[in-house]
Length: 136
Image 1: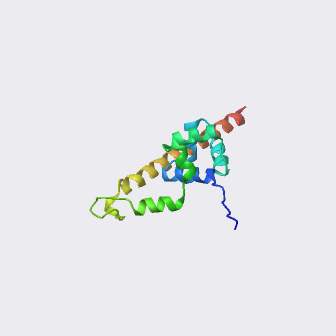
Image 2: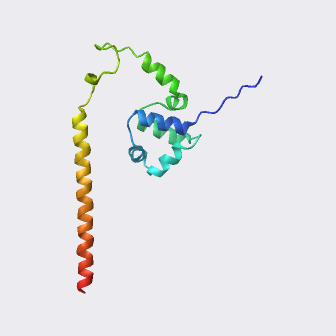
Image 3: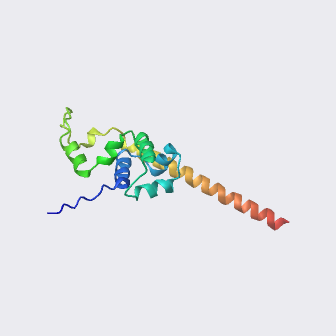
């Protein structure tokens, strides 16, 4: 009888933990001093260098063992067995939010407005530059 033990995909585990921590690849990259593309490459790799893995674990606030042993089933079990003493016993409730959805909407609106203003200014700068070239 042959057991087919598939090796753990460390990159996928890193990706899932990073997502659960609500961290973007860019933030993780900055935390460990690499590019976002490097994080993407790491997350697509089955194996990760031990030194890099230690840095990533530290940046994610977990242990190396947690990354190596991470499974979706373990997370589901953890959340299903989580002992929450709140009024709704851990069940999702819109009134149990830790943030105000309207605040998040306004933050996104403000970010979009700032982006629009930067793009508009860049276009104005281009027009001014082209006009200057035409005048010569």
